[in-house]
Image (cartoon, rainbow, N blue to C red; front, side, top):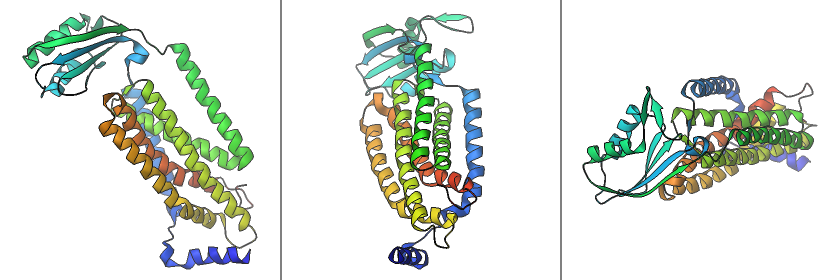
Length: 314
């Protein structure tokens, strides 16, 4: 035990270890956290979500152009502004395009019924070249209200199960800290999805689940180190503030390396994974940043706030 105490003391005193006082800014962190969550909720309330055809049903049209298209973004914005924001044009390359028209036909806006023939006519006039219709497919929503309610129930039960496991393994204060941290990740990520008007489909749901899993795993590593240091140093004059700082400094390199590896993989998916995985990769990139910050800092800051009177979280 004396050997362990010497290691801890040297860690605090040795400047070469570059010990950072993360908890020094925990009050500012709570203010920023509160602002981000409120901003995300307001964005979700006013901007809503851009539901994809997985939720709404609609029509998918695959087109092939003989010549490369250079002004497709202008045409896309023209169609979206004139008819419906739920029309999305996706490009696999400069020749092949998918037009996703959410909601079953006809699309109705400003009491005007618009079908996909009119949209194709706009494309023909604006692009001034012929195209080949490779496929037209009308589909119904693959995710109905019952499945959405089941998904929400599953998330609630998952959070309850996570809280129960961490409560039994690490203590109830860390369990509540972890649940709040996961909710922080979820709300901020959903706020960014709404703000960026990203189309919400099945792949986005999968990315949200992946973010929660990643953040939870990293949080448990940090909490385990806090618990371990709490037991080892409980008989010494080292308070919980110092123990949490020590634990974060001990796990920070591992967390950053893990985040960088995941970020490299998601960047590869974003740039080389194709259009179908682009939104999935984008949400994962956002989630890596949000989840890393929460697993390193938010969980610990919440834990420090909820410490018990005997200066222990456990």
